[in-house]
Length: 260
Image 1 (cartoon, helix red, strand yellow):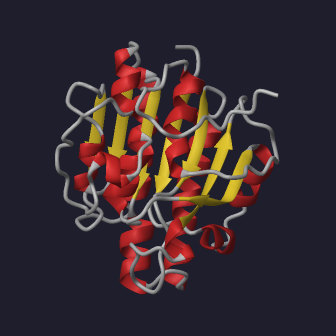
Image 2: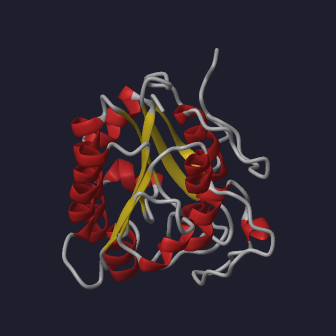
């Protein structure tokens, strides 16, 4: 596979939080790639259902995950990891929240690493380093880097849009910058979130919970273009097209690559 992708999910990142965290790389991503500040996630706006929709390109009523407890689907079909593997690609995953292991199925990963954000400090930076080491040593076709501290240590502990939340978000954005500056010449870098948040919670249909940003940095995307009508369901088809993999028949999202 000639083209490779790294997907970075910053848990609980609200668009206004990204703009307010003070990290200049947010504006750089908007200049260097295509972006949206009003993409929609799925309801319930909770971490595992949202990520299942991100990777399986269907809403929760179809994949069946409506809480942070995984249940095997009644009618399983391939998600992004499995579809890439089916076509001979190599995938890797680095994550700081254990239930997220279920977004991939056995035999669909070349390598992975998990560390609990509750049991260690600055796990976002640690996982970023692990992902870059994997890329350097194994050059996988698709890498998923998930950073949870914005949600857990920022939003839930101190409240969305608190200074503590913004500080942790800025650190996560620094990790995204590190990835882009290190491997952006070899990988399309996509930075997004699963959901937003309000007060010290999320999961509702409030705009604060349902609206997420997306940034696409790579040759398939026009610099400075603002994308419209974007859903979290669109990520798997977009990544599949970049890598050169046929999307699964069951996926409902669309590719965001502009072919004009």
